[in-house]
Image 1 (cartoon, rainbow, N blue to C red):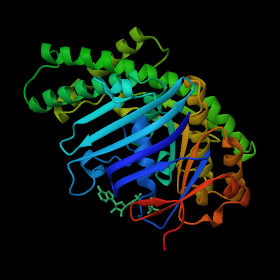
Image 2: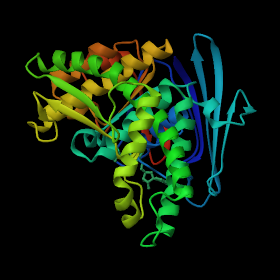
Image 3: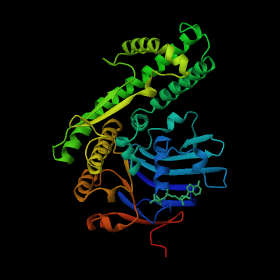
Image 4: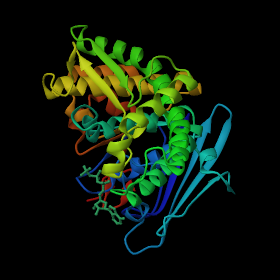
Length: 375
Ligand SMILES: Nc1ncnc2c1ncn2[C@@H]1O[C@H](COP(=O)(O)OP(=O)(O)OP(=O)(O)O)[C@@H](O)[C@H]1O
């Protein structure tokens, strides 16, 4: 797929900006805080309706404005599509394809696919489990857009069940209470859908990431990715998972009532990353952790391409300079001209001349983008 152009209105520090992409690789160069990441964030929003910066819609809208719009033209094998996302200060969003508003946001997902790689991704290795859950969820949303709906349903049940537990915290509520039993059943049903899909995605992703990791590290390191769901998962059978879910809720029922919160479910899943059988968080240098993240990102690209049937976009936010020359080259070899790539950087010095010659170079300054440096 190929993103031909994007138009931003009152988005972050862009008042009104049109960008036409004229090459498979676009390098956005500019000083810090000029708007480079903001442009990549806009593309990410079109792909996932999420921002990895966890921004609220009112942070995305330009200061002092009430609404913001991202509009893009995408070329796919099936034809050209026009995507529009409108954000409002009150949090209401509208999505449209070819100028036709969609009733369900889910139908907007899966049109544009993108893999984002920024320095924040190091948190995948170093940070807490919620980073890895978010990463996996964002990938899943692109692999099967219905997952966005499944996850939303689970989160809604979770919120309601938590509210019920909170209301009854320290009360004499029985763990056999019939209303609680209803919430348990809904949590198990919706949670099982989440767990099964996370398991399936990791089953497919893990061998690809492992192969990339072996290739980048020269086969000296073995990466393992283990899904550790909060509920035991022996086989990917819905009845078996649902049963295990309900049994574990029973075991934790007293603690849940005491703490007034749900202690069992995919909101407590973990994805373990180990290198040579040592947790990656404790393993080796920053460089080795970067190799791992790079392997995960390359695996995401490959898996999305396999599932969707077209290469997704790659958004490299200030990460190229952080990789040593051999890893940089490995990344460049892997993407070549197959994946349209948007790259941000503060200086062009870290790119080899072959790259510079084949890339479109855009200059970003104070929320304006031009093809010649503005002095
Ligand atoms: N809602 C908003 N309204 C107006 N300006 C905003 C808004 N959100 C962010 N900005 C501005 O956008 C700029 C940050 O841009 P961005 O995050 O894209 O930086 P960058 O060019 O990628 O630089 P860096 O290399 O530091 O990441 C800051 O000047 C910030 O004040």
